[in-house]
Length: 386
Ligand code: GLA
Image 1 (spheres, helix red, strand yellow):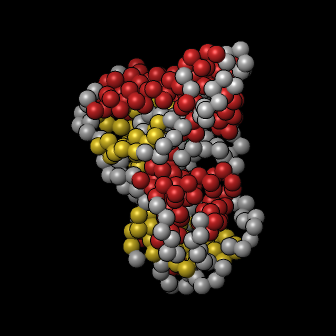
Image 2: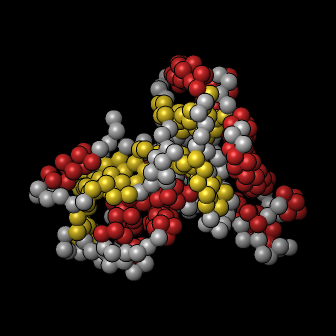
């Protein structure tokens, strides 16, 4: 069931003595193509979804943040002057965001907050970026910051890096803050330039299949992937000092360092170079409304993520194989990998058959259910009510 303002407001009133605050929301995201390219200065192609975080927030005139997580039924208070902050993760995101906003000069004061979300956690739909973006947007609004959306996205990014230890890229926070109904966005992660692409595919549906294998990027091999890419760039720098990321490197540069980097690092970098080009090919195909080419590129991405980048798992590979068997136009792992969802581009007349088959066969093989999520491309972070 879709989360509503009332779900949050009723809890806020209960926990904070009958008062009310201002309500904000920020969404999770999908990504059509362009995986593990963001921290390599490449292109990504995300869009916001209708699932997200809703938070009600009210300044309380102290230096304390008093936060209630409706989903976890958990309450925590901590001071803005505390250096370490809470360890518990939901609250740690809020702490990180508040601290990063203060670093930017926003006069953040204490506040009461109640929040809930309907982005399935560990699904690769960026529930954590939704939380960060919601609070960054809200604190900017409530405490008179005048910070642009891209800088707010970096607040979330720094929170991941500095407070959670995940060296992610900018895609998730960018998408959560810049999303626009019925539009995907192509972001150049090196320059920060982006363009909206209206989603016009009338004969197709975008559908996520959640393997329900929970991915967690905390302490995960995610950072190892990033290190591999950086190792390769460092090797290439020996003859091309201006290269700052894989975006600045060519296949030929990579071949030149083949005997200087490990086989694993080489394969990973090769995937990233291919993936950056695939995003551009998909942009062209979308402009021509050639969705079959979009789908082919999605399958190519999956193969690369599975074999070269090694961020798939048995369940996700199986979901993509079923999609292929059902004639689905495109299917691949979405997000960081290691579990979570596949994203599928499905011709409308194949949709029913695909959904039935995928549910039945997944259950038969793994003795557990996968979950179907029809994508509705929604708006980015915003205020819902005063
Ligand atoms: C996670 C990260 C993103 C991005 C994707 C992979 O979602 O948070 O920055 O790297 O993985 O594309």
